[in-house]
Image 1 (cartoon, rainbow, N blue to C red):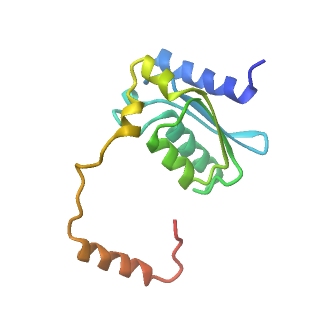
Image 2 (cartoon, rainbow, N blue to C red):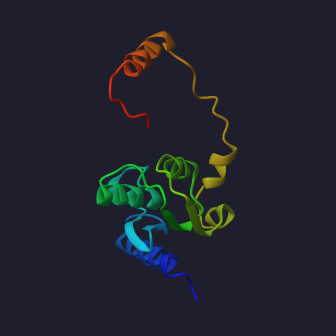
Length: 148
């Protein structure tokens, strides 16, 4: 018998693929047994490469809860999160991730997640560090700031 939350993630993904929104990636976020966020891949619908299922579910959960901190939540997704989504999951403080398909499964249907795990980042370089450090110092001097 399938996990009920994963079943919801699969249904969310089906909704997206049949609407032409993007790939077969659906996600739900659960806190204390209650679904607080859901989303599916909307890359094609939104013309935005950041609209992965996990990102959409995180945005939905944050809107629903009124906070960027999803501590204590579990995330159920139809495929292993890509590096972008994994970063967002960490920033949101989600405690546990359950995924259905592996990176190699994703590769087999034409998505290139594997490339991002092997990528060399030789296209980036430091620029105007002193000016940016001054910005950081300005931020650091602010009263009542939240580090996040």
